Length: 114
Length: 116
Image (cartoon, rainbow over all chains, first blue to last red; front, side):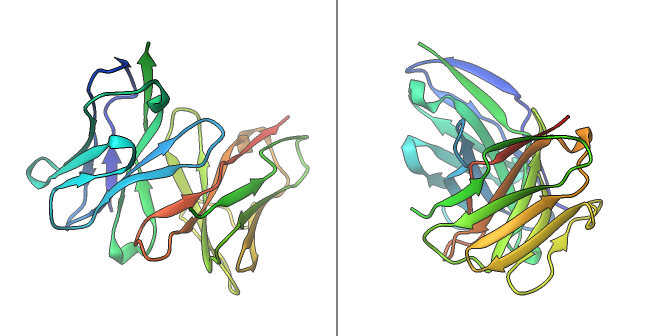
């Protein structure tokens, strides 16, 4: 069974600083990996996804993530954080064998210092 | 982009009553919808897969008789929490697959349920 670990429950960064949110997965084959963002009062929104190919994927809102098979990681990065990026971020893993089902990590809450 | 709505956004009910939560895909059709439950500071836990025209598929450990799911049309799925108890208080979220992008889902804003 697949699983996802987000080691950081809460992270605070200053506006303009860089950001990296960690995500580690466990799955026997090549997983399909996703990052979603959840803002208060809104549904989760897909930031980016990795299926295959280039291990560095670009997403919306200036986010990117890098798939590292050797480390079973799919960390989310942004070079310069904006105050509007404050939200909860979820990493998720899926597999073709499980249909459209996703397994989510516990999330990382991002706070942005002015 | 595609929108999924949920109604109500929050509900308070007495223990022993039933509560119905609606999930609608507003500008697309969804033969499948997912229902999740999210506890504070925890991950989204998949409860069941709602299938239009057939029975829902429940995840292990989820009580079918407790959480009734009906996928009445290609744009509507409902979750009914029957005989609700305080331990059913949670944040319930629905989603629908984003056609053409495998694994990506459109999520509703969630429904917060508080059972007194």
